[in-house]
Image (cartoon, rainbow, N blue to C red):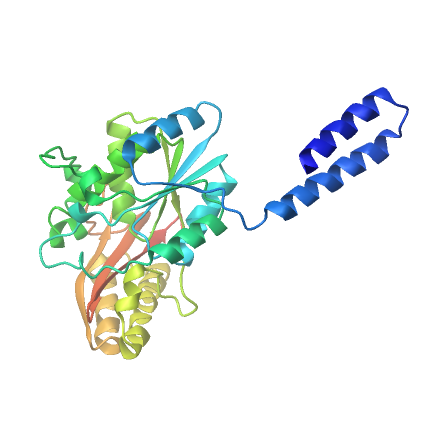
Length: 326
């Protein structure tokens, strides 16, 4: 009714000698009423079928810039930062929520991975998502599924050594999501720097028409990198987990003081963790080339200090750049 009122008023103005400024003010007033009346209504579309998402996004992508934020749910401030950046740099925000079984190895936490679907739906809508894609396992990996994507070089080190097959699952599901949504840009966090490097290499090698954007790590007030797996930590474990980032900062301080030997820098982190995270177990502590994730012996210009630490049930990863791009 309000929109119809605005239409007739515009028609009246065109045919009568009415002050145009008054008419524009009236139209603005009506548009504000429309926004108020529709506040609280959901405009976010929710899909579970890949084929439906593909058809819908192919149509949208002809006229609008689509941004995709792939997630496994249990949203925190890190996810929110990705959605906000994506919404600001696109016309249409698509968010996927899929706990991908193919990137979990035997004995890992697939069954216990935190799932907060209703809260995630509300938060995605609040952050302006136009589409939320929540597929079921059987639709992403139907019976007889046997096609996999591997990026051997970049995925071989770090998590690739301690979680065999992990990046095969990551690359496969991300490629599927890119084909389903056809985004112009896909947005990932830098907390899992190796994952970002794997996806960038896959996109480059396969000539995929999508920009991959890596966004900064979002941290708790005490420096702990935000992660869905932080929920596994008990109070004492949570306090110790904050020292992971402190150890990385100690390593960076040594680097800024002139230390370039990787062994000495790694020992700084390991010693600090032994003193401050007595219940922790270092999975790895490496300094690698940020692009190809190969080990460095000596940091000349730029290196990525990447670590994984197990504390209780949680395996926590973090990283920090050493060098000119800090």
